Structure formats: C-alpha cells, structure tokens
Amino acid sequence: MGYGTTHMTPTTHTKFLPEIYGEAIVARDQSEVLARLVTRKDADVKNGGTKDNFPIVSALTTTAVSDETAVTFQATTESEVELSLNRHYESSFMLQDRTKIQSSYELARLYSQKIGQALTDKVETDIAGLYSGLTQTVGTGHTALTEALIVRAIQYLDDAKAPQTERYFVGKPAAMNNLRQISRFTEYQTTGNSAAPMVGGQRGFVTNAFGVDIYITTNISQVAGTPGIIHNLLFHRSAFALAMQKDISVEQDRRPDYLGTAFIASALWGYCEMRDDHAVDVRTVISA
Image (cartoon, rainbow, N blue to C red; front, side, top):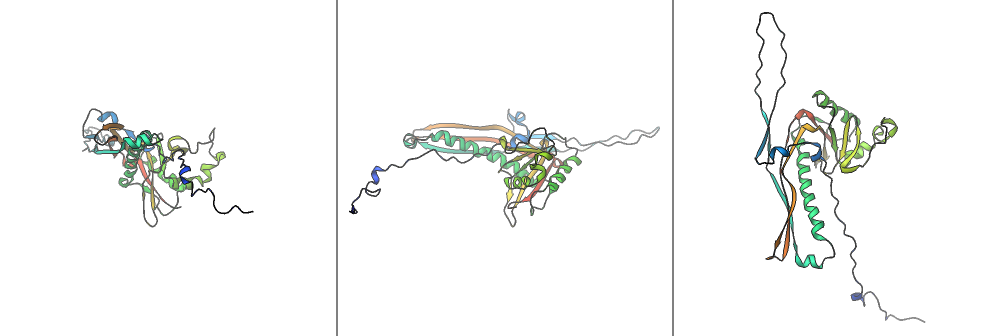
C-alpha cells in the first residue's frame, strides 16, 4: 500500500533544519624567508632618520718598489649605497559590534593575524623585487631550473670572493619542482651527509646543496609573459639590506561612533641592494 505524497520533507520543514558552520578555513600564511636572510640594519635607524648610508671602500692595488723612487700613493674617489626609509604601509579592518557579538568565531584574532601577514608579505616581495637591479643573471627564463644554472650562479659568488658561509638560494615552488627532479638533490646516498637532508622544513628551508641553503617561498618575483619568467635569487647575505624602522605591530581603536573596533597593522622600512656582485638572478620558466 502506497503512502501518498503528503510527507514531512526538507522543503516543508526547512525552518527546522539549521545551517551548521564548522571550523573556519583560514587562508594559508607564508613564512618570513627573505627578511631573515639579508643584512639587517634595524639598529641603525631605531632612533630616527630618513636614510641609512653605507660608504663603499674600494680595493687597492700594489706597485713594484724601485730603488731611490718614491712610493705611489693611491687615492680613490668613493661612493655610497643609500637605503631610504620610505616604505610606510598599513593593513586594517573594522569589526562592528553586532558582527562580533553574533559570530561564533574569534574574528578579531583571525583577521589581526591576516593584516600582520599582509605586511610581512609586502616586505618579502620588496626584497624579492631587487632582482631587477642585478647585473648578474643565469638562465633565459625559457627553461626549467637545472644543476648547471645553480653551479654557474655559485661561480659568480666565488669570482666575487663572497664568503662561503651565509649563501642562499630562494626559489618559487615551480623552481623547487624542477630541483626535486634532479637526482643529486633527492637521492640521499649521493649527498654524503650524515643525516638525510631536510625537505619541506620550517620557515621555508628545504635543504642544502653545494654549501648553499635552499629555501622556498611564493613571494619570489615572477613576470607574466610567453613564457612567464620566475626570478629566483642566489645570494650572499651581504648582497641586500633591510632596515625595519617600525616593525609590524597591530593596534586597536574603539570607535563608538561606528559601534565597532578598528584594527590597524602598520610598519615602516627601507631596503636596498648593497653588493651587486654577491647576488644572481636565476631565471626559470613558470610552467616547467
């Protein structure tokens, strides 16, 4: 015997069916990478100022000594590197009282983290953008990252007498994809290390190869085109400088006229290239 069509359905009883909200899906944060790998000049600017200047000391040469002849004095005309403290940025939001009261989520905490992260990313992309001033490049941007490109970039640093310590390669995920397909970097038995290399480690660190620490970050610059080009960086710490005159901080301000609370993150910094011959723009293709 049939039961007919007069039933209690989700349509007739929609008011009894609540919408459940689970754990919020929070946009992933990118770890600070480049800002930790460059020369920091925060102490220079903590007491004020609009610029930080670094005089350049040139190399001197030798001259053969001749009997009864005066020595040849050298006098170089020096220049300087200028770091301008002109990067003043903010990220903010207003949380109205009703939204805060009726939400089951800690919105102030969730979004305060995001505005701080936005400024972290801005500092990182500023440093990554210094590739545009480099004179040393390897790769055309039309091919994948290869071992030969890395070795040639390292030679540029060797030729410049850059210290063997504090050398870094920072690449975009696409470049890391290429790197992981090179057996020398993925087969542990060829590394000669006493322990397996760290892969996907903390704060962007991947592994070490040829005495260069390798990091991954999405904040490395890329330029759209046919093909698109990634500007990975291989550099010594002294190649770039960063000065945080006001580090990233989040303030809140109660606004009764808006019945809400403003949350404002801000920072003030400057950055520059210091040693052109201590850094290399490693150009690879985006899609390889």
